[in-house]
Amino acid sequence: MKQHDHSSLSPKDEDKNPNNATESEQIGNKVIYTCTMHPDVISDKPGKCHKCGMTLVKKEEAKDETSNHEMEGMESRGITRPMMYMGKHETMQGHEHMDMDMGAMKISADDRMKMLKDHHKQTLWAFWVIVLLGIWMIASPLTFDYGKNTVEPAGGRSVWLSLNNRITSMYWSDIISGLLLVIFGWRSLKPNRPYSVWVVCFIGIWISIAPFLFWAPTAVAYYNSTMVGALIIALSILIPGMPNMILFMKMGGNVPTGWSYNPSSWPQRSLMIGLAFVGWLASRYLGAFQLGYIDAVWDPFFGEGTLNVLNSDMSHSFPISDAALGTLAYTLEFLMGFMGGTSRWRTMPWMVTFFGILVIPLGLVSIFLVVSQPLTVGAWCALCLFSAIIMLPMIPLQIDEVIAMWQHMVQRKQKGDSLWEVFWKGGDALSTENDQRSPELASFADNPWKVFKSSIWGMTAPWQLTISVIIGLWLMLSPRIFQMGIETSAANLNHLGGALVIVFAVVAMAEVLRSFRYFNVLLGLALAVMPWLIEDSNMTLTISSSLAGLFIIILSITKGKIKEKYGLWDKYVI
Image (cartoon, rainbow, N blue to C red; front, side, top):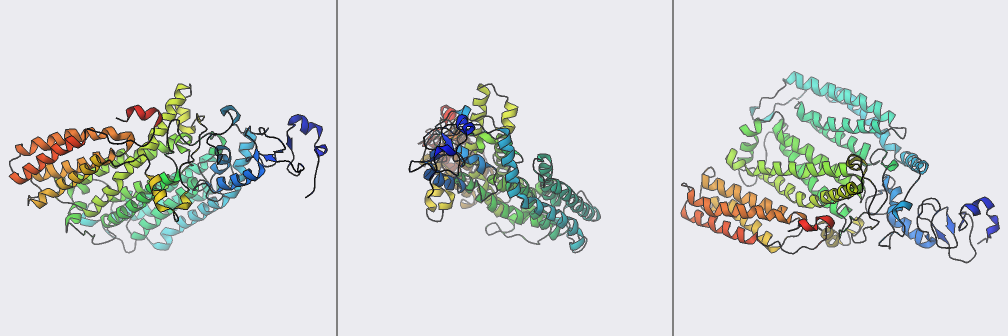
């Protein structure tokens, strides 16, 4: 190896940073230190990088560290995430904390712009694909002929458009959407055009909505638009990352202050993504029936129950297919699960908020509509229940990330920041602590149980809540066991009461929402008293319901073991 001495450095460079040398130089047999963000900066002494303020590390450690960063979970996914650049600043493998103050964690505007342009070159293919998909959408109505092999909605359902208007609406929707994709996809071929990229994303959302809004007259029109719509969303803001985020993303740690784990880690999100995909499959199948693309729907338990529910007056009261709307919700949940890096709870509060809205309040509404089917329709729908079972655990799995986001915004507000700006841009980080606890998602094949356990951190099932769920199932099944008609008042009480007991018990399995178990105290009281006031019940069912209510009250008093820490939220875990 050639040896170089320090005389090769210019006086100007030495004055600028006497500890640094150029990358081409080697410093005798001494230990060489470098910056993981700027590998051209090297030194024969420990110190700080003069470009970004990071602590210099030994060159061999830097190589391992860079490799670790580039393979970190799915945050980089090859070359497609802008956060991979920022990640080299954010994470110091093998160090619990970065050895620098927050003021030093800065990147100049010129460096950020250079990163943006470099990243755009690496993901340029995605925008070319968007242009090609635009051409595909323009050609689709002409290729598939939406006026041939048309169908009518199931159950003789009347819709707000005539058949000719449904054909025309889908025809022009696809052509206009395709033209707009070509125009704005072409504009997005140049970097630093965030508005064009966002327009492309919303066009993708519209393409996903149009088939059930216009009651697409053919199956090919429905499937073509829903698949292309999802691809457009992914290609515009999922694969390249949020438009221009690299220009304002704040560096810092990915573990919330005072927390024992990172709620935005990839294992935490992977389970949500998997559940959303399974829910999407079930909802798409039910939507295909309501839209008229298939003639029958499978129900392994309730015979004609699914048909009765999907063709009920309650279902027909919606101007659109409620199952197809659920498919869109699951599509967005699936895609949003991939969005952002492992610190998105602080870098993307707006996205975590919208994701939380999709999963939590809308999920609860969806679950309530399903469990109320025996009351409103007098029948159960097996796949609807399956969708509710998929949605229910997503609520406790997602709420911790929302709480972490809330804590970050509260802390930034206390520092005097604008909540509006923090909501959209994230604000400065308050912690440099990085996640050393979560296993790599890539290790799932070798250690599936370890990865799965990390995916449910923050959600525990103490025996009290587990038994409450079992009692809830018993209440839902007991009317059939004791041969009570499904439309009797006693059956309604048990069906609805049992389902709500399960909902509150499962939601309370989220340690941050453990106080939700107190709702079951009220439910238990109602179940203990109301059966004695109902005339169409029999004595066996009455005693069963009352005893179940009393047991639920007792089981809901203690909170069970809490395993994790939640910073500012710890005082609300009661």
